[in-house]
Image (cartoon, rainbow, N blue to C red):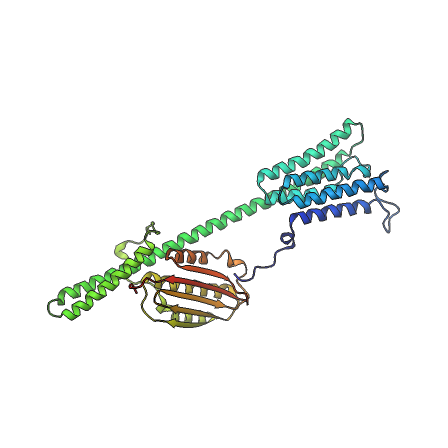
Length: 401
């Protein structure tokens, strides 16, 4: 969750930069194979008539300008950019005296095809590879119609590189789409699981409150004539439990429409679930796991509605779990501020870990869902000074504590 790991060079540079570099590499290679290099008896390829003349250099310069312009447009208008690159590849053949578009002049197009297929819609990628193959075929057919020689085998090899570049890019696009689908499904499942856990916590809390109300009502009925003071205390306990239960239902029942199929009401436990009273025990367990937890309490230590109490505990529990698993630190700090109208929770650590889980922690997604249902605020983000911070603010209605 902390600092995002460094992106690869492929992701840091925009596609147009790679395309421009590929074109420049092709131009350099074109010159190198047409001069005698050390250890060679002569150039591998004989230069064309115009290759070493100003007219030939002008063609190469014009082609380079078009290629760079196409590279600059690749992200915004990929098909227009590809058209400029294809035009540049054709113009670059004029001073070379070749019967096909050489691979060196088509390398930038292969790179562009990869990025278009990998990052754009599938329809755009198919149109791009179709346009590229059509230009290659049109170049050969035009030379045949003019009675000029053609390098059919070499052109087939260039066409094969275009098809391979598109296939690789398309595979990357499919893998990315599949990964996004899995992430969306996992996030949905995390929200559903958290809602079910909230429903279970709320069910236990309501069952506990109803049990308290039933016991206190029975006690009040037995002593109302002989011990009115005790009866009054029992009625006050019933009022408090009723207000707490109504508060929890009002906050969450409208958002939780699904019942748990495997837990019948008659077998539900009367345990209201963990709350802030269990934080010290949670801190001790976490410390035993190797991460020392410093818990700081501030504000008024008054009772909380069960739904708020359970949710506050869940925030701390999930944050400490992430510290143990991902932070790579031996200590963290938990601050709990309890005021009349709200409770604020903050979990801080200074570890170097968490990595890329900042945006994909499904436990944090569930917590955000839980806090949102309670009309609170939730944040989980890296700290500027290092480490990570999880914070939540839960409003508490006055009169239901």
